[in-house]
Length: 83
Image (tube, rainbow, N blue to C red; front, side, top):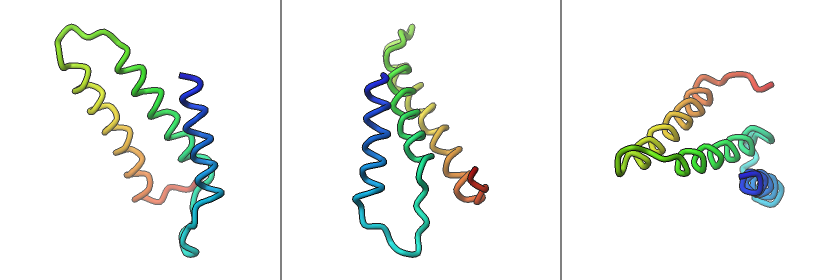
């Protein structure tokens, strides 16, 4: 899990440095790397857990990751200040 989260952060910082971004868009530096690392860690944790019913693993994982994405989208839409 540590290697996966480190790889996600390194991939974000590499993309942040090497990608061509529109000049009118302020691209954040740190939170996308943290978001990618946390999504990977949660996905791994939820898929490694044992569940009592077949197929419940997929449902729980999809719902939890959708909830995390929803929180991020709401924060982006409400233009919360970055700290």
